[in-house]
Picture (tube, rainbow, N blue to C red):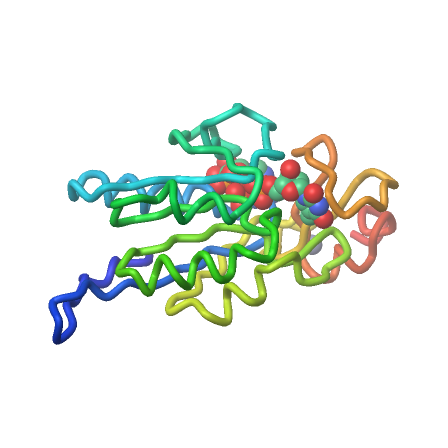
Amino acid sequence: MFVEPSHQRGSQNIRNGWIEVICGSMFSGKTEELIRRLNRAKIAKQKVQIFKPALDKRYHAENIVSHNDNSISSIPVVSASEIGQLAGNCEVVGLDEAQFFDESVVAVCDELANAGKRVIVAGLDMDYLGKPFGCMPQLMAIAEYVTKVHAICMVCGEVASHSYRLSPSSERVLLGETDLYEARCRRCFNLGEAAYHSL
Ligand SMILES: Nc1ncnc2c1ncn2[C@@H]1O[C@H](COP(=O)(O)OP(=O)(O)O)[C@@H](O)[C@H]1O
Ligand SMILES: Cc1cn([C@H]2C[C@H](O)[C@@H](COP(=O)(O)O)O2)c(=O)[nH]c1=O
Ligand SMILES: [Zn+2]
């Protein structure tokens, strides 16, 4: 379980910021964990602002909603470059579905952390082909803390790290849930359609 580090102040009494990344496959609990951390910050009376890419409107236009129906309000943004100004004087900034943000998200997170904010980013580390997704590798590289969470393989019940696409679409961005994707372990992901026959 991730426990919050305390905010240290430097020699000029400036708060020390940092970046946390929560990554993993679909259904691995990224959004649940993001909401848990943000709610704890709210309980600690910290000013919190949450953002998501405007294209992700699966469950709700504004709220961030997990697969098990936990939710928290957020601001949808078209470009990550909007976040800096909207984050204003908040102390904690949350980003969900970070794999969909444009590449400016890396500099934006860096600047927010440099300005003393706690930045918590959740996103898919890999796409449906098992390739690194968007700016997630860069965000993981510059983060102080990286948490990789896991789902359960829907074929064999082992620990799942991959998101297997059930449709033939080869678009990288294809929004969906259990209708289009299932969590799989490495072996069942590589077996593809044959996985269910190999049990
Ligand atoms: N294969 C699976 N493995 C684990 N949890 C699953 C699976 N399929 C559905 N879930 C549900 O998804 C929830 C996690 O949802 P969420 O936090 O939105 O995940 P993520 O943001 O990583 O997609 C779990 O608590 C569980 O209720
Ligand atoms: C693997 C993969 C996923 N997506 C989409 C499908 C969902 O709408 C989101 C991921 O949501 P979650 O909170 O992590 O469950 O991303 C995609 O567009 N392309 C992909 O390769
Ligand atoms: Zn498996």
